[in-house]
Amino acid sequence: MHLVVDHLNTHFAKVFVDILGQKRAQKLLSRIEFHYTPKHGSCLNMAEIEIGILDKQCLNGKIATETELVAQVKAWKTRRNRQRKTIEWKFTRRDADKKLGKHYVA
Image (tube, rainbow, N blue to C red; front, side, top):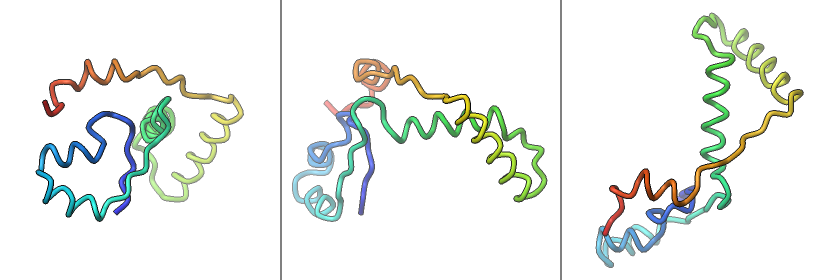
């Protein structure tokens, strides 16, 4: 199993051991290969942001056919690329700790 994750401290093998115990964690971890996204802004999060922008700017819920959907998304993508729009990543490890700290395993 391939697991694509960011670098949040809950996304490491040690957490499996902490929660499941050594024996159960090892059995599961032997089947997992971790793939970490870049430290300066998760690729997955950036994709989610871009999909949200696509939804707000292009997908208004009134698209009747798949052909129309493909055409509208293609036109949106062309405009966005022509404008050279980028994502300015600002969410830091400190922000993650503040927002998600209550969910961390002690």
